[in-house]
Image 1 (spheres, helix red, strand yellow):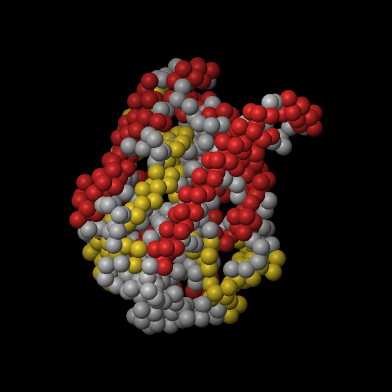
Image 2 (tube, one colour):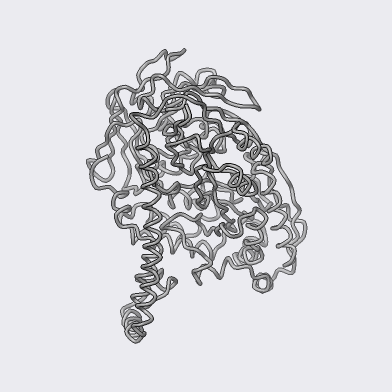
Length: 604
C-alpha cells in the first residue's frame, strides 16, 4: 500500500503508555488528569499551569527518569523479540522447507461453512483458510499479536481519489480451485462485489462495520472494484479485511446452499475431508496466488473440548500449534512440558459481560445497572479462570492498545467498576429497589466450563446485594440464537460477544440501537441517548489520532455512567507452537490464515 493513510499516521504517532506517563510526569499531571486535557476553559488551564510550575523539579525529574527507564526496557525487549524473529528466519539456507502437517484444535464443530448464514465465529475460523479478502491483518516479525494493521491480500493495489472513494485492483493470478462448478476460473471483481452488495450484505451479521458508511460497491471491470462511501471512514482498510468477513466466495456455491457443507477455495488451503464432530482436514492450495505459501502440506483442525485432552495432545505432539489460544488452567503444564516452544501472551480482545434487559423494570434505571457492576468482584472472576495476575477489566472497550483506559488506574472510570457492595446497595436504595428475586440469568456451555464457573461467581455477587438471579444454562445453538444477539427479553444475559479489532467496531457492535450483534435486550431504547450517538459518529470519521482518543475516552466514561451492559473481564490469550515449528508470529484473531501460512517445520 502506498500513500499517507490514517493507519500510517496512527502508527507514527502512537505513544506507549510509559511515554504518556512520562509526558504527564514532566507536565505535573496524573494519568487521570491527562485523559481530561482540553475539557476545561482557559481559566482552568491557567490554574493548572500555575500548579504545575509550583511542583518540585526533583519530583518531576525522578518520575520522568523512572518512566524513561521503563520505556527503554520495553523497547529493548521488543527489539530483542524482533531480532530473534529475524535470526530465526535467517537460519534457513534459501526458502523455508515445504511439508509437514499443522495440527490445531477448536472446542466444537461448526454449524455451517457459510458465515453469511450463521452467527458465531466458527465459520470465520474455517472460512479464512479458503476465502480471501481484499486486505488482511499484517503479520510481520516482532509485531504484537493484537496490533491490527492492514496489508493487501487479494488486492494487488488500491487508490483513494478522495475521502469517500476507494478503488481496488484484484491480483491477476487469483483463481478458484479446479472443481465444479467453477472449474478453476479467475477470481473477479464481480465475485468481490457480490459479497458486498444487495440483500446478501444487508443481512450479513458483521454488516455494522461498513454498511452505515456504504453508498455502493461496483465492479467497473473484471479486476477493478469501486467503493463509494457517504463520508470518511477512519478504519476502512482494516474493515475490508475484517476477520468476520464478508468473505469472498464464488456465487455459484450458493446454488442449493452448497456453501453450508463445503467451500471452494482461492486461499491458502483447500478442504480435503470433513468429519462432522471430529475434524476438518485441509491441504495446501496448489494454485494459491501467494505461492509458495503456505509452507505446510496440510492443516488439521481437531474438535476437542476437554482441557486435559488438549494438554495431552500438545505434550504428545498430536497438536503442534494454536490459532486462538489455550485455556489458562493448562498454560503452566504446557510451559513446563514443552521446552523450547514459542509462546505469545496478550489480553484477549473479546467483548463480553452481563447484559440486563434495559426495558425491564427496575433495570431501566442506570443506577440499578451501576449497582450490578459495583456488586461484581472482577478479580474473583479472573481468579476462577486462573488469570488473576495477568487479566484485565473491560470498560465499554476490551484492552485495546492505545484506546482502552484501565479502570484500575483511572479514578473517573474506576468508580463504576471497582468491587464495592456498599456502593451497590446505596445505588439500589436510591433507585427505590429493595431486593430482587428470581430474575432469569442466562449463561451457556458455548465457552467451556470456566465460563460456567464464572457465571456462578456473578450469581453469588449479585445475591450479596439482594439481587437473586435464577441461573439458566443454554447449549450453544440456543445461546447464539437468543442471548448472543439480545433477542430474548425479560432476562439478564451473560455472554461473550465479539472479538474486536478496532474501537469503532467494539463500540458500534454493542451500542448502536439496531446492531445485529448487540447482546443488550431491548437495545433499541439506546436510540434516545443523543450524547452517545454524537460521540459514536464523531470518532468514526475523525482522522486526528489524539482527537479520536479523547472522543473514545469520553465514550468509555459516558457508557459507564449509563451502564447499558456490565462489562466483563479479559484473561490473556496464551498462544503456543511446539519447537519443531519456525516462522511463528501469532495474530489474535479467528481468521489466523496469515500466521498459519508463514509457519514451517524445521525438522523435515
